[in-house]
Each structure stands twice: as C-alpha cells, then as structure tokens.
Image (tube, rainbow, N blue to C red; front, side, top):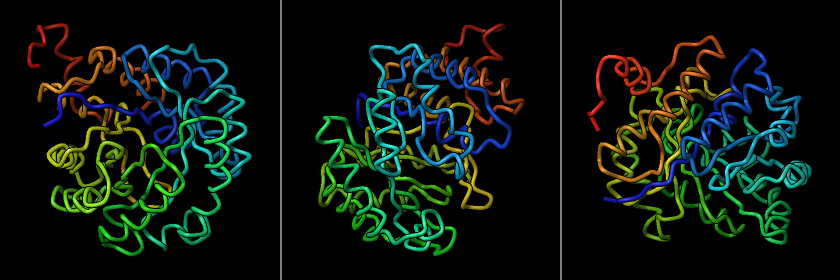
Length: 306
C-alpha cells in the first residue's frame, strides 16, 4: 500500500455550494486559511459559475483575493466555460477544474447537453490552460451509479476518462456523486482504468450516502490510488440527486490514512479544528465521526490512538 497520499479538500466549494443560507465571504476565507495551515496541499477554493445557478459561489473572486496564501498549498477553481476560466486566471487560481459525467442522463439534467458535447465545450478552456501553463484537472460525476440510470459500467467511466486525457487533464477525479458505490464496484472501476492508464493521476471522490465512503477509500488504496478528496465536517451533497449526502469527511479520511501509517503532511488537530469551526459557523451538527470524537477526548486524554 502507498506510503504517501495527497488529500484534496473540497469543502469550500463542493461542500458550501449546497448550503441554502448565505455563507459570508469572511467565513469562507477563514475556513480556507485554516485548511491550508493544517497542511492540506490542495484546496478547492472557488467556483466561477453563473450566480444564477450557484448563488453561494458568487463571491469566488472576493474569496480568492482575500485569502492569505500558504506557499505549499494549491488553490483550485471550478471553471465551466472560457468566461469562468478567465475569471479564475484573474483570481490567480493555481489549478482549474472542468467536469463531465459518466451518465448521459445525468449530463443532460446537470448541464443540459450530452457527455460528448459537454467535454467539447471544455476544449477552449483546456487549450487556454495549456497556453497559460495552468494545471487542468478533470472531474467525472456518477462513476459508481446514477440517480437516473442506476448502475454505471466501468467501460462508461473509461470512455469519459479517454476524453479527459485527450483534453490534457493532469489529474482526473473518479466521483461517486450520489454515494452508492461499494468496495467491489470501486475496485472494478479503477482496475478498468488501470488497464489503460497509470493510477497515479486518478483520485477518489466518494460521498457517504450509504456509509460506504471510507470502505471505498480503502478499496481504492488497495488497487493503487494515492489521491483522495475530502470535505471537513462531511459537508456537501448533490443538488441533482435527492438524498445524496456529503463527501467523506476529511477528518475520517485522514484518521484512516494516519492509522495505516500513510503520510499526508496534515496536522490532524488543526484539521479537526477547521471542521469544528465551519460546523459552528453554519449552525450545523458536524457530520464527521473522527473530528468530534478526537476533540472531545483532547481535554481528558492524550489522544495516542494514532
């Protein structure tokens, strides 16, 4: 199993975009700074989409302007089109993220076009990113199941991977958007990808709707995946998938990795504090398991479990 794993933190974007009540720019900035100080190497900080569709993300430029940047952290931004890309570049994003789906129906419901059309729309973004030497990451939704089509085959996922590779993505997220995946399904998808490409450029993005996210992380680790996404306090969901819950909590992910003696470079105490901060700011119960448990033990024990 790997000795080092990269953790990508998605709570400031994928997590907060699902909040109904407005989250202040300062709260977002504080969260991002806490995550960077905790040692997170890559924070998904903003989304330059139309505020008509995702009003929570309309202050992306302000957030990117106000954060005190950590020298060892990349700050990524979601860019659905060339206009969004240009805004991300102006905001000094280190990486831009484009997205597609492994399900034709989900693609139509989510962005009103086919998979092929959606990825072709990203070609100008990809060309601009390569021209400007900005890292381009691709994200594929519904790789382990779709709310409309049900089961998704590994071949469907690989077909979209091929298109993302053609666009020049340096890293590709394999996302269980609605959290229906199981370890066996997870392994099959990554084994299909590994038959064509090195797994070093693929990440695991697991939601925890059915409580399988940590198990799926372990399954992906076993086949060689070394990049995982998490969202502190388990924030997140999917506006197009009824009942889908948040991403795997970063606290739970890192607790697992550290328990396996896998290096992440992350300060677990500081990470748990970030989860507690955003939960309190939102007035929500912290959905992580490891974070609240760890913090509750701090005043009475030495926390030597790891």
